Image (tube, rainbow over the protein chains, first blue to last red):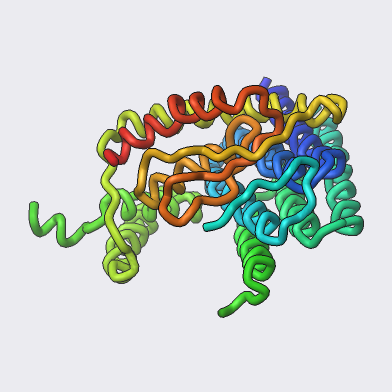
Length: 104
Length: 89
Length: 165
């Protein structure tokens, strides 16, 4: 039973990570590409880490330190996305739609 | 059953890594490459976690945490470079 | 009470440090609780000079509910984004959105921007100098005004209430 739950989390997590990477390859311009990795990949990793947590806890040794990596990723993913978007806009990287007028 | 699930998940992660590497090579902009590298390190953490479950060892956790931290610092530094043309001002 | 306040100037920060230390060592042994407590007390005190302003959580209960709401939204958002990524490419309607901000606190704006980045189809790009406009990028925007209203109601209002600004 526990094996089934772990397996579902593993496939779910890896699937989302793959979808994020497909988005990275498939979407048309930089600003849209930004969406795949920041959202899907972060959630996918969350799924894998929850699976790891359940697995090690079910073997008798309570293991919660995966939470630390999950929290770290959920805190840093928006920051790196924000920095990348800011840098891209600063360099006026090509977009499918018109870039906005933006000065500080 | 778990062994099969781990195997499938590993194959999915490796496919994701290949797609990331493709984006690193193709570009076309520096920002795209940095984004691809960012995704690459996050996916490699996933692969390490899977390896940890496969080997039933929690020794991979420290590596995962370190990759997460150093990867984030790397992305931040590269973005700063794009924004200012310099990392340490 | 006053002594306690001087000993623990940032109670939430100290508590988070202790929890992180215990998670990092994956243990609940007495020795690590003691060591973690020492770190949790000394580190905020040693770095006090770097903290510009102390932020007050006005409504911790609401903060917890907001966290759960955001976690739920992240899951839903991801299923939506996954659908968009796998659907034919011409269906996308990306847009840059100028989002008018109603708050001025740096930390509160950071929390809002991070929330926006993690939830449905939007990434925050930049904030302007006088903290009045946040620039967003939406992956598939149907109605710009509706999206802005939705973010205001769902995320900005609770954040304003939580930090009391």
